[in-house]
Length: 252
Image (cartoon, rainbow, N blue to C red):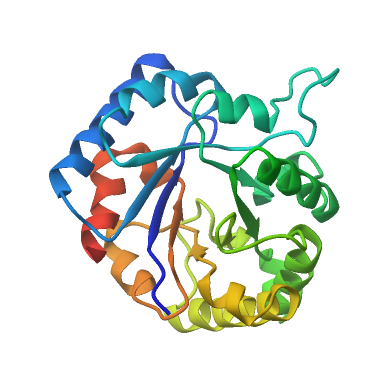
């Protein structure tokens, strides 16, 4: 099954206006220079930079995404951003259920499910994140934890067209530690089996499953050549043009 690789950058809480625009322009220029490619590119800056980054990306085949959203269209939700607002400024994707949101904001799989449904209703694609902690990994619970998060977080109306899954082992995010390629393939294959049970084999075979967790140019080819890995959700390396595009060039 041919699935277009997605190279997605999660800028997290990084970037003031000048830095964010410069980074976006750098990414746009490099993507244009790559020319025709089978890769899809996405950047997800902080809310404050969405409009400016959208302008900076003009003319380049790079999609815009956000890092979270509320499940309501509007209302008395101080400090929150609705899916409709994200769509309005040009977003095509939204990251939901990142481990940092699950940990820092105590977000449950049930809440992530509601947010995903709301994103679909506005025409946004949800990148739903799952992954185990180091303690869960050491206890041999990796696949069980991921399966539980998928069953709780992924809506019943999820499809390959509106959903991307991102497997990010919590212990590998920003630590420099990475699982072996064998381990990554094993988990991704197991995730696809769970998706098949929940959504049907057809949807599961078409749905992209990204790997995230200390991905960099030096290990990108190893991970992104695996059968069930359909791209990368990149954190720290997405903040440097040469690293972000270096990952893409490694698998071009």
